[in-house]
Length: 307
Image 1: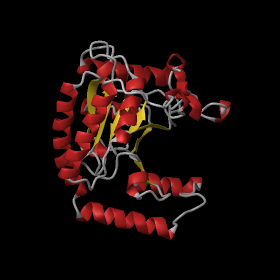
Image 2: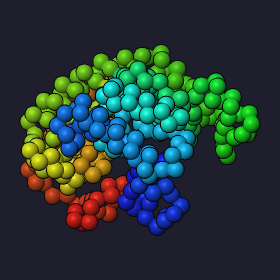
Image 3: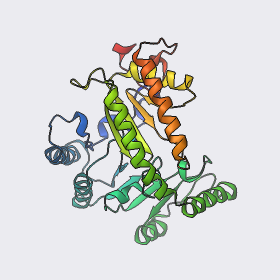
């Protein structure tokens, strides 16, 4: 289902869904060709519907997306745009599926990130953060869809390891802790602090073009200069490298540096983390050398010009 390309797809040929079959044009306001969020919502939704009409069989089972597109650049849509996607799904008789594997539980300041938008999907997928690293994932849907699937079609709900008791027990305990300690409220409160501090850091460093995200899930968009907004993957990798020297482990994909502390992080720890992050940015801007060839990374999918 993903549009992730590069080395992850290399050599697979027809065994994977080609990127051109992805039809949803994202609400990426920072680099939108129209400098008007409301107008870009309108245009991108129209383009999405036209892609469905002209590049698919028009027999649409579902539209699947992250409510906040994390690997795509932490793209935070407006409620207007997400409601538009819901409307498109309804017009085409398709289900709306939200993938919350990276977003739930609690990380964005809501248990489910789609709760920020008052848009209810037909199906939600989850995993990763919900299961403390164990190989466990799940799907939530309506009773009507579940019953229809269970009945005539006979589709199984699991594969090789259904209902494994150990990861299920871990997942249940993690859920109990999230609810017991109100980690959702904690992410919302500390998210305000992070937003303010990252905004201050952005103001002091020209290589940070934009800061996006919600709650405890943020991303720095690293650029060559703010006027052009040209992505700078080399600088992002330098920041990641120097952050590691500061004892801070970050994810850098292309020019996107992800900031995602654990949901149990304290205010004192966040203050320390943000200080280390700014130190790393300063050292990267000073031109400190790194020993990493970003072109060798399968996750970065860098352009040949950057090799």
